[in-house]
Each structure stands twice: as C-alpha cells, then as structure tokens.
Length: 90
Image 1: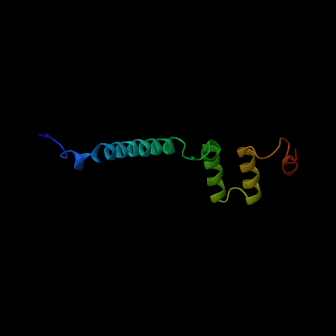
Image 2: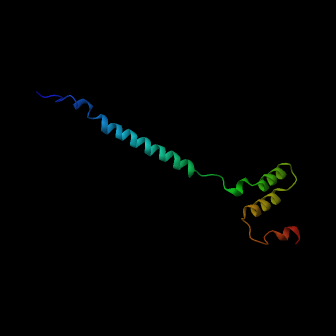
Image 3: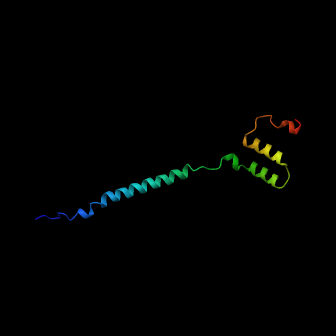
C-alpha cells in the first residue's frame, strides 16, 4: 500500500509560490515606504513666510521686478553680502 503517493504533487507549487508572493509584498511595501520618506520636497527657503510676503507685494505692484528679484535672491541666500547696496544708495 502506498498511502499518499502522488497525492501531494499538485500542491507542491503552493509553498514556493506563496513565498514569492509574500517576498514581493514585503519588497513592494518597503519600496513604497522608502519612496515616501525620501521623496523630494520643497526646500525650506521656498516656503518661508518672507517669500510669501515678497510674492504678494510684487503681485500687488508695490515693488518693481528688479526689486523683487534682488530681494528674492537675498532671501534665498543667492547674493553675496554687500551686493546690491549701490541700488539703495548705501
């Protein structure tokens, strides 16, 4: 008597296939988490209240384009100290 001979052959793929699915879910989940954590975000300088005020003043016509660009560069730290002081008469 051969109890169970050949009876498990059709289920042999179930274990390895389940392991592959679980491994894929783990890798996919880790990928999603890491992409969320390391996703590019706006820099701190691009979202400061000072830049919001500057944008508002320019939009309302309170300052000229040249003043806007100079002040934006100063706020973003793109200008060197003393640069642009000739324009203000200092």
